[in-house]
Amino acid sequence: MTALGKTVPAAAATSAGSAGMAINLDHDDRARAAFIITLKKKTNFGVANELRSRYETAIVPRLEKQLGRALSDVNRDDRKLAKTELEKEPLYPIWARLTYLGQDMMWDCVDTALVHELPRLQTTASAFMDRNDTQGSLDLDPKLALPANIAKTEIHRQPGGFCFETHDRDITAGARYNGGGLMYSQGKGRTAVAGRSGGDFVRDMVAARFPDFKPKRILEIGCGTGRNTISYKRVYPDAEVVAVDCAAPLLRFAFATAEHEGVGVQFKQMDITNMSFPDESFDLVVSHIVGHETTTRGLPAMLSESWRVLTPGGVMFHLDVPTQPGHSKLFDQVLNDWQVRYNGEPFWMGWADANVKGILHDMGVPDDTAFAEYMRPPEGGAAWFCHGGRKAQTSANRRAA
Ligand SMILES: C[S@@+](CC[C@H](N)C(=O)[O-])C[C@H]1O[C@@H](n2cnc3c(N)ncnc32)[C@H](O)[C@@H]1O
Image 1 (cartoon, rainbow, N blue to C red):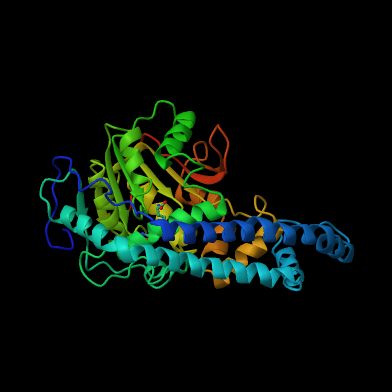
Image 2 (cartoon, rainbow, N blue to C red):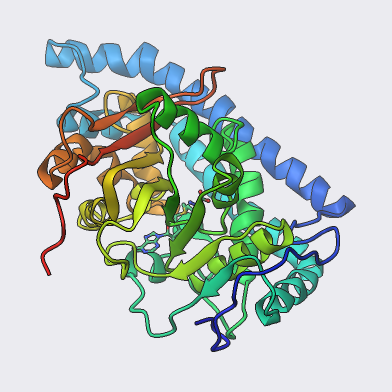
């Protein structure tokens, strides 16, 4: 059922004006955005690199001399030592303040653009919610017990968070999420998946591992505003695509975007740690940057649910930020820890420290297909921490009735 109390059935493609669900920045918005992106880049690369160089040339030698051994990127005591020393550096609070300020300015800039964009976006989205000839569907569940990790947290310090809504068609949080994403990725030098669509990246990585695999039913969990969802319909044109998230405003935005693009996706509101799909419903289960926003209990639950709903022979493929100790240097771990405490990323360290390979093993993912490793597109770009596996052809791992 939709928020409006009806199911929107599959049917013909639609168009709602050329702008669709894209956020158009006017001259002043672009000027503000350019300033903020530059500020974020200077902070994340310029100031942080100055601090890194101070850490490497002064702090590391001093600590290693005191300890009589090399610092280790996987030692949590060493992380604490590095943090204590870095906090004494004059540049550290400057980096922290600029990061905090850049985030505030980013959301101000997004909301200023939404003053002129939101009415059009809302009208477009509402029109799709009213149609009965859409390609895909939007199933919202107003009774869903919203998971606290998302409903009670302003992730990325997004004002109001992902679930906040004031009426049953509200897309504001989705518009904010996408507006923030535009600037967030540029200010960090990362795009959704190293400059390619999420579907392209996952299809290539899955094909390299399991060349015979051709999914007919695909599930994306934690789809948000559907930034990657739509690409799965393009790279697997014959497959049915279902996408779930707990945040209704994000799902409404995703549904309207997919419809505007003439792509039929079934969007459903669910808690990904406790989904209502029957066992063995999907051949491919994917997620993009979701695990780092779940709690230490939520992560294994989300992975177990992905595995439960997978058909025999199906593939589970999740990708997320590569912040694990070892891949991430002690210096970066300390800066990430600051983001946990002050910048709306409360689950980053739990994610970074999680033993994902161990969770997969405990869930019964066969060791010969389980993977938890860094992957990057063949043409280069940032690495992602990808994890998953392939279910055996026999019907195992079903959830107890
Ligand atoms: C960082 S966003 C990523 C969204 C999208 N995959 C993308 O790449 O833009 C994480 C998403 O996971 C969703 N999420 C996190 N925990 C969830 C849960 N327990 N149930 C449903 N959705 C959840 C959030 O609502 C959010 O939309």
